[in-house]
Length: 76
Image (tube, rainbow, N blue to C red; front, side, top):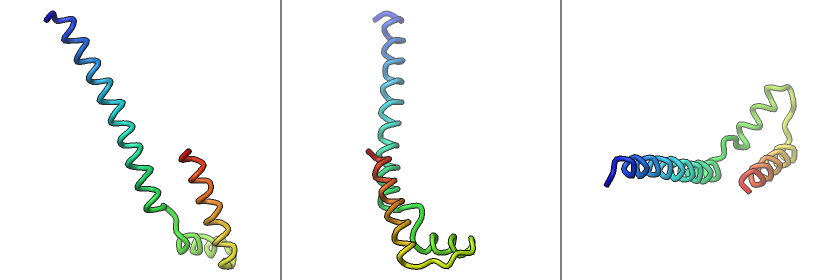
């Protein structure tokens, strides 16, 4: 084979590997964040207390639902 064909094959393999790695890493991170959300109810309660608000369970549930809905929309 000529040198030009080898260079073309190497460049094509690098592009395919980079694209494949990107999509695999993206899927892994989406699954990880779905299983382990970055903010849970206890963290939300502490943030509200630091802001000077008295957190009720109803308000915390509303905020968690809003965050989950927003995360699900971003996944689509």
